[in-house]
Image (cartoon, rainbow, N blue to C red; front, side):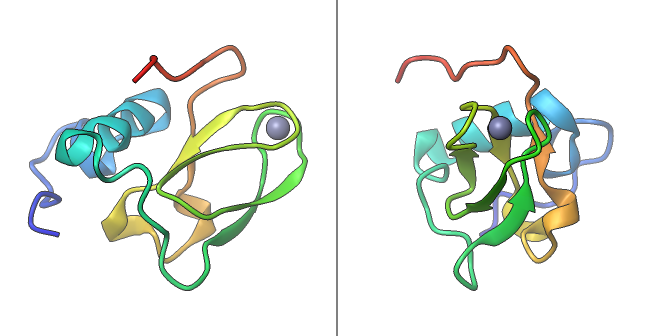
Length: 94
Ligand SMILES: [Zn+2]
């Protein structure tokens, strides 16, 4: 990927929560967020409403509550690394 080295601190692909979601959303000029997560996605449980769903792209929404979740490429091997942007968060309009 090249873009995703750890620059230290609490930004970039190793950020948490909403910071991570926004980082992935904007990465590659917006080109990363719709790319498929390897291995058919990550099965997870919505951190907002506890519905089961599969995160199939690096930024995805829970189908039940539209809660926004994201994972960064270097951390996409484990659903535990999925970050949740928060109950009321909505993605900025493209
Ligand atoms: Zn949900």
